[in-house]
Amino acid sequence: MLPVLILAGGLATRLRPLTERIPKALVPVAGKPFVVHQLEYLGAQDIRRVVLCTGYRATQIEEVVGNGAAYGLEVRYSEDGDTLLGTGGAIVKALPLTGPAFFVLYGDSFLPVSFAKVESQWRRSQKPALMTVFRNEGQWDSSNVLFEDQTVIEYNKHRPGPGMDYIDYGLAVLSAELFAGRDPSIPFDLADLYHDLSLSRRLAGMQVFERFYEIGSPQGLAEAEAYFDRA
Image 1 (cartoon, rainbow, N blue to C red):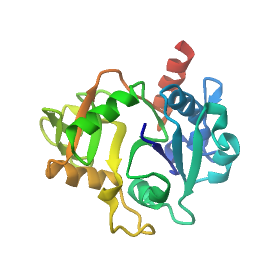
Image 2 (image 1 turned 45 degrees about the horizontal axis):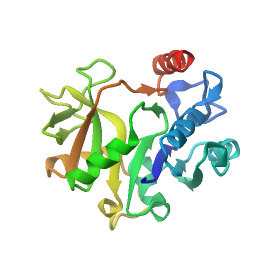
Image 3 (image 1 turned 45 degrees about the vertical axis):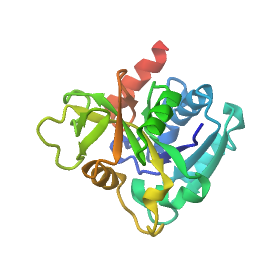
C-alpha cells in the first residue's frame, strides 16, 4: 500500500495550556498519546511506511514513536526546521521520503476508514489526487466541498459557497508530481492546492460515512476521548 504522510508540525495554540510543553501529537487521549492511536490503526490497515512531518517540539515525538517497529511500521521523519512550512511546504520537504504517491493524514485526526478502499478509488479515478469527503451539512465544522459524481467540483476552505454540504474528511491521496518545481523552503497551505485542483477537475472524491474525530479543539478532544473509551 501507499505510504502515509502525517502532518504533525503545528503549534496547537487552541489546545493551550495543554500544548505548552508537548506537541499536539502527544496529547494523551484515553491513556495513550494521540499519535499512538493513529499508528496502531495504520498498522492494522496493512500500512507499512509512515513519514511524520514534524515542527513544534519535534524531538519529543521522535522519542516516543522511534522507528515505528512497535506498531509494525517503518517511521521516518521530516522536520520543518526553524520556520514552520505549513501543510503544503511540509509535504514538499518530505517528498524525498514518500515515493511517487502517498496518503496525507492530519496529525490531529483519527479517521475510521479503509485506507485500501481509498487507495483503490484513487487508482480507478486516474486523477493525480483524491480527497475523502463527509456529508457534514455544517455539523462538525464549516462545510467546504461541492461534491458530485466522485469528483470534488470545488473545495474552498476560505470562502465556502452555497451548496457545499460536504467537508474534507482529512485523508487524501496525492501524487508527488503535483509539487514539482516548488521550493521546499517556502511555506504554503495545502488547501490552496486542493482549491486549484478542484477547479481544474483534477481532484477525485470519495464519500465516507462514519464521522471523523479530531483533537484540534477542547471539544474535539473530549469527543475523541469518549470515542476511544467506548472502543
